[in-house]
Length: 449
Image 1 (cartoon, rainbow, N blue to C red):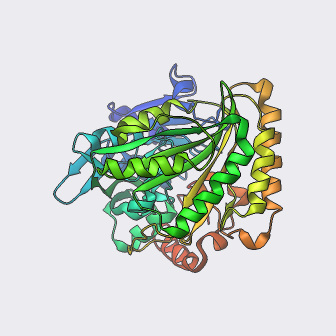
Image 2: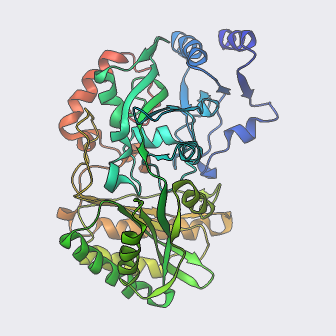
Image 3: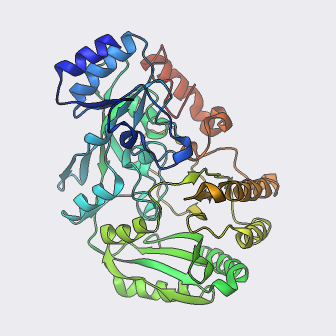
């Protein structure tokens, strides 16, 4: 550690904090309070050169380290007890090239801040439903979102990257390295910057459709029946939907985040009327707006910190059996306002990039997020028990309807079976990992081989 401290002393522009620093607790703080670890040192580099110097010292001296982007990992894996945390949040630039429809994005950018910057250029890019998470960490591991049906997953937007490898070299990723980055994340280096596709889009039609709490179970079932029929009849790629059940002032309600990603607002209004009719309607906040403004509202619905965890089983479809389990456990959902569950869906009509990628979950599927979180330790046991029972009940449904893959960011490392997750891409991952990081210096990345 002496060489590291000497390096930091010689580079006074790099902020860092040890356990006895007054700002250490704030810099350590992550979304899930009970998963927060205590690193030996938190370092906040500001450039690729800073990271190059840090990694050279850390890997040469076998000092364990982790990379923190946004700090929203539900299992606290962006930090490790006793290790050095390289906190990327000072590297948060956005450089837009409207002519090539790409943007170079810093490895520590928060998604909400990226959307605000893109809006200045009347541009958008696929982004997470929860915009407070780190953009790069979301994109490199897959990246579900409301724009996926129109533009594809987050991983499919990556066309370039600047990386610091295990020897401290600053590299522009070639296609071989990019293949691993697209789905394997930081397994082979520190991702300082990604070059991502962006798309011209100004006004959208977006907001929340809130259905009647008194008709929660039947309303969820009716919505699902109508939604499946609409997909069979032909569903527009411009329409993104994220369903969730959340506690509100009038009780538990099914809520749909509705995003019509087109300037043809009149056509979007027709679909708004259709989707609103799929279950007994309570109210709607859907209106013409911008992507950034819509996400500001979404951001306000999510707590900043909480106790708890997450479960994320994946199914081929929402069969009647799965819907019945959801209905039963929705009624049992604890009443604290933070707890919820939601449904991401990769629809069959979503565009799939031809770019090389090891992300393997390419068939149509639904990912159910069970999020048993709470702001109080007093309700933590009840909340966690509900989430576990809900997950167990879903996993007891017809095994033929489940996919073998798991979504890495939403599952604890102990439950990840990488051969199943990557399928035919697994050997490609192992080969490139062995070539680019033979000594496994990036052993604390989410993808651990």
